[in-house]
Image 1 (cartoon, one colour):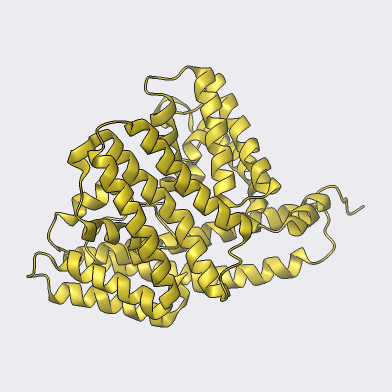
Image 2 (image 1 turned 120 degrees about the vertical axis):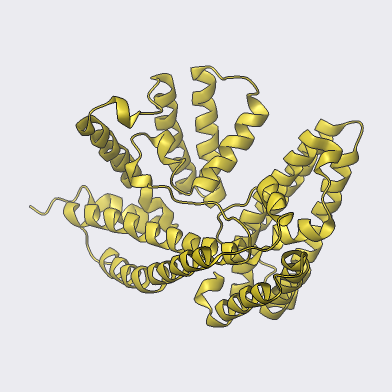
Length: 383
């Protein structure tokens, strides 16, 4: 969200320059980064800063307690996760009615749905590693409030972020060039392509639709959200790496995925990885059976759907993808090795996967009227 505000972009760019100029100081990307994160949120809105100071402080105390808790660890672990999920879910259900400004509403809401995943990842780390997971409060606050990925991802892993914290600020000329190119590419996607494609989609979707027009809009919208999501990710990866932190890739050639299971490891990869890692880690310590894997796939996809939004459309979207992925597990078709099959077979499977994704991708519009209008158009033949 920050990247559509030129003042915010200039502030983040200024922070990158400050870090580059103070690279001789071993703690510059810890202390200066925290000062920047706090100042950025304060200037954006002091209420936003107050909210996240309280939210992060409470979760750090929970994290610290879990590191040292000798008894009732599992009970405390589950309770802390449940409280975080309940808090975010409650705010989502209530529609953030307490927020007076729609921009602040968006910042709190978008930040929470990403940050609660980071909070839970830190709790997992504390639960499984105990005292070895202890982390200075400064680094924990930087992890949660890291501005480049605050409202758009990619989702940072606690372990990886803390490993980066220990490394001195070091960005080479080649890394700088690559990061700037990523930022420019992301800006082009988000500001130019997405803006134009959204105008086209909004214009066409308001008209009476026939089969071919609905099909076109579904494919068009798929391309639109790809440029939107990947554009944000490009900018976040670029700025994050310029600040000395290795931001993971969020899109890994998703259109070359021969199965839905592989697709969700490549599309919004950090989100798929988060749900897969945490759900499988908690419910299936050993190698799961096909039926267990199928059930967990359904559970994960339903949770991903509800993470996107509490509505029957997102619930059905999750069930749809979960059932298909469950069938892949039951039929032992979760992966296809490109080297062991013919090119024709591999790309046919890729095309089939994209067909399944395209059939439901319009749900991402978040508007039930638009979704139903486009689906109804599929059955409206032009003759």
